[in-house]
Image (spheres, rainbow, N blue to C red):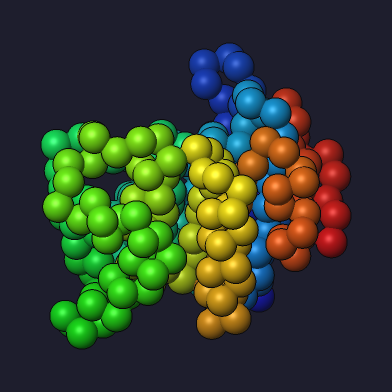
Length: 220
């Protein structure tokens, strides 16, 4: 496979209900691709299939030259695929700093972790102020910052973000996209799902429109 990441003729059903139908797309290294569509269009299902939380009935998922659709979640994560879920996946009783430490668990050494941590806290200074606070006491926007920070600290090669803008102020959203642009320049591929086209069309290299489980258009 020449592309860094691709899905080919992917279909997924929940019972008799089709959630995704014959999806194909490719993402290259250092490229940001976005998929937009209304709630229920299949965006979250697509991301859960890529990370391995669900298994498609048909089609293939390729990453870095390997078919991965039957690999468990932890193996996909070890390959450099990192996922920020729509529900954030925050543990309420765990401290903010503990979340970030877990995000950096796979890094090579303490120096690398501290460098990544410094970048995340510069991007989200509120997390520095809340470092010793329980995550469940954070506001919705702060929890979104924590979920993003935990993902970014891991030095992902392929970053999936479902509903990036959820709970964030417009200026924070712009800061995150600027940071993601920097990751792209380092060769990281980014796949973002959003319900509103205007939030992604400025930054993404390619935008797909997903509705009723089908890709109906793409814009470069």
